Length: 115
Length: 114
Image 1 (cartoon, each protein chain N blue to C red):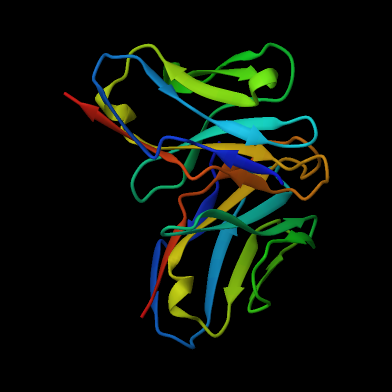
Image 2 (tube, chains in turn blue, red; image 1 turned 135 degrees about the vertical axis):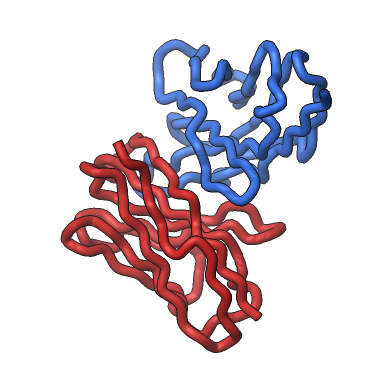
């Protein structure tokens, strides 16, 4: 079955520390992968996406993610976290091979940043 | 460029009532998607409209319905509201609705059912 797993429900890091949020997917065809961020009470903002090509993709706000097909992973990283990065982060796979139009989301990881 | 807009921002209804949520896509986008984000249930796909037609719906009862207008804006209607319909309803749009396009989300409508 198609699914996305974010193993960490909650992560706390100190400001200035590095960050890695994990995402594993299960999808039978070519995965189209996304990371979105959601601040409390807000909609989702696209951080970055992977469709094909270079497996290391750069996004907004200094985030990057690496696609590893062998591990079915698409982990999000940031070298130095800022207090404003505190939010909920969602990994998603686009169910596009069957043209359903939908994104399949992970359960999300809440990031807390300590001063 | 203006993003996806949704109205209203917040809504309070009682059980059994009906509600209509509205979404305007990014200019030039023809596809609109609706998602429900309920506490403890995560983000669930509701509906996809493209070029005025319903293309796909998620695993929701028929009392969830909608439509897309010629200007590509969309409405989501929920009839006979139940307590568990309380959620943030997110609308997204994309350029073409075909394979591999990126969905951009609006700020959502928070629906509370009492």
